Image (cartoon, rainbow, N blue to C red; front, side, top):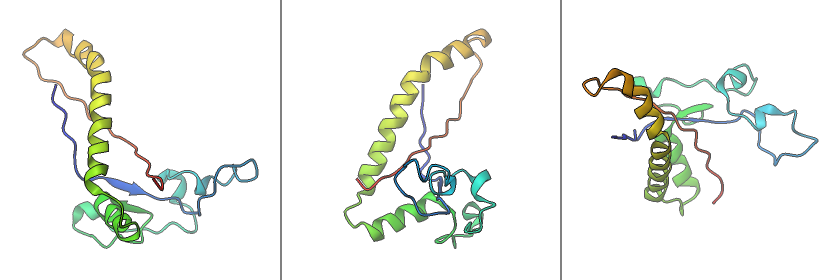
Length: 130
């Protein structure tokens, strides 16, 4: 098994300010969910360019490149440690790959050893104040 961790991705943001969940605000989904299909219709949604096509002007966009978002976190929180972030990401990926390995092997077994198989896994990671 070989796992590859890409060092770029997307950061999605709520279009309404976050408030800790309470009975009085659970209906305010735009402050609790970053789902693009919900937020793209919100009045506060900010369309950005395509950072993967060279348009890096996405500092205010509701959907930003991970590099932009991490840079913004570093600016706002000087104690943020990018190396520690990536170490945590590697740990999550390694643990998940270890868990799914038997499923991947079982799925590939009927096709024989000569065939190559691969899986693409996406990870949603949330950062908090810690």
